[in-house]
Image (cartoon, rainbow, N blue to C red):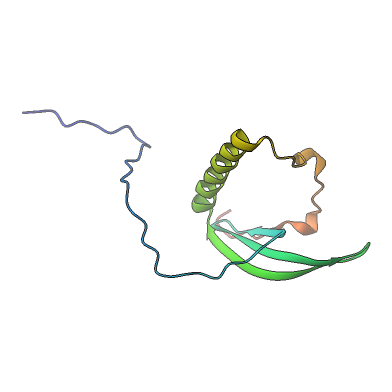
Length: 116
């Protein structure tokens, strides 16, 4: 009797498949985003800044995309890979570091559920 080959725990097998899109989706431009999350998912609001002064930032909301935290983590990794490839071809992009960005407590929307 031949021994069955064991797969390592936590490893996934990937099958390459062709992605067939059902049609054209609307396209939006965003230069402003807001993020909110619960214990189960994350929502990203995409908007476009249309006016700004010393007291107000006026934005037109474009779309709100919600997804599981697992999907968001996978998306973050894919975005990092694409940006890394772009920078290898065109040079580094300047973006302030997290230490340079001040996020007010009001800017972070969180919800705590009974399972937290």
